[in-house]
Image 1 (spheres, rainbow, N blue to C red):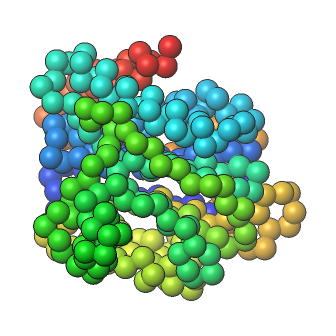
Image 2 (image 1 turned 45 degrees about the vertical axis):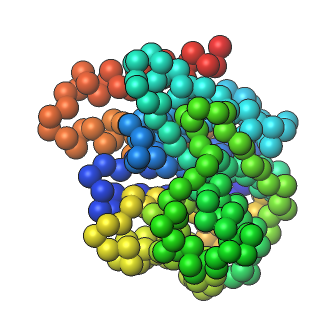
Amino acid sequence: MRFTIFQDSHIGGRKVNQDRLAYSYSKDVLLMVIADGMGGHARGEIAAEVAVNSLTNRFQQEARTTLRRPKEFLESAIHSAHRAIVAFADQHDMLECPRTTIVACIVQNGKACWAHSGDSRLYFVRSGKIAGATRDHSRVQQLIESGVITVEQAAVHPDRNKIYNCLGGVLPPLVTHSEEWNLKVGDTILMSTDGFWGPLNADFIAAKLAREDIVELMPKLLEEAERKAGSESDNLSVIGLTWEHQDDEEPPSTVTVTEPVEGFTTSSLNTTQQYATAKDDISDEDIQKAIDEIQNAIKKVSK
């Protein structure tokens, strides 16, 4: 596999970045995942981190070469992440379970498929157009589909941040997944939290991707989304991948990432360790304790 990949996250106007994101890949298969911890619930960033760690850990355990059933893997792994979040809350006697959205994508054998719960989005962009996309599990999306409001009205609707599906909730999450898409050279998969996609029109993003390299474009779009949202900007996070080719043929253009010779390469943003080390009032012991607790919650539901 050969592809160009980009990931970044901005805290926006919030005191805490509750987004978590990562990608992990071997020479045969790639996972990308973003989780947006829900700010209206206690410790949303913990829910997001448990979810991302749970998926990447399970991916590395099961993707020895490729995944036999990638859609089933995503569904099962997301439900497992939900159980890990609930286990963490139970372990710490939390009055309210932390919650998070999630969107994840598997790329292998020249194909991509994805799954999500909540309103973190994936756009599949081909030739400057949105060819495929996730459907938000939100109140305003229901209103759009019933013809009550327009997409433009949804952007300023008072219920625009209300979602009915997530990880960590009272009920197990509804996981919606795509069909497999055959990848063509130049296709882009763009995953983001609502702090990024909210201020930016999807067709505007797609048109930009047709004209600019993803590594050069995405920092500018992150800044544009944050500028449009103003001082009340939410956390903004994005992972973008532009496909080059599957086989060991001569690539059509320069690429950023090629597969590792063996094992997995993983890149994560906004982990507990990365976030906490910037805070003077948190000790190394506190950081390690938080990391260990998250891993223990994941292990409990992985047995």
